[in-house]
Figure (cartoon, rainbow, N blue to C red):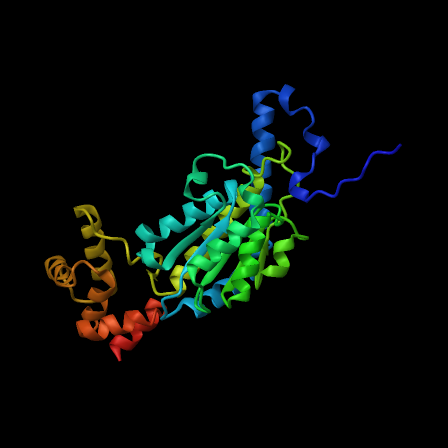
Length: 303
């Protein structure tokens, strides 16, 4: 009797090239692992046009609305998603009420394994129902294999409710592909340690989300040049940084005057910059609510 053929996603394959991993020298192990990380980044590079279009469409949905970024997944994938999401708050001042997660097994699964959670389509549907999605929301499903039932169901439900759906995966034949408006597929292939998708696939997920969210926050007016506009000035170092940024982008302001203006703006650098270019505080707040790229807001302040 012949061996039964099992169709596995490429991320689950066993690569014979690394069959001797456990007996190889530590230097060889590290070389193989590092090379797989490099291939992961190269795989993400091939997806740049798709990431760019996903950013444009996500910005269109979120801009000037109460729309949320929502990360969905199980295991390692959702841990990477949560890491990306939580950093948007301190880095870009993204509001906490515009950020959400659908986590297989619930928040406890971020630190301990919850058996069977990734297969629970019913729990996925409940998570999405509880979020009360609108067409302004952007839902990102993350799964190396692209077939995780929980994550797939999240995307299916979200798309049905009109949200923009984005799949982040390493499998070109992923079930999630058909449930996503945009599929960001970095083909990382089999892992050095077979099935350990925290390695190359995980690196590709982290890189993809880094690119997507940073470009998205820039499109929504939270970056000027290559500087962060919305970092909360919670200490003197960050206040000094805001003073320097204001002086760099507004002519004729001394350090003391810039500091006084920032204090009046309650250390909201964007408001201070728009005021320095002639806008009133109320006009600046109204302009910021449109979430246009910040250079465009500065240009309108000068007019």
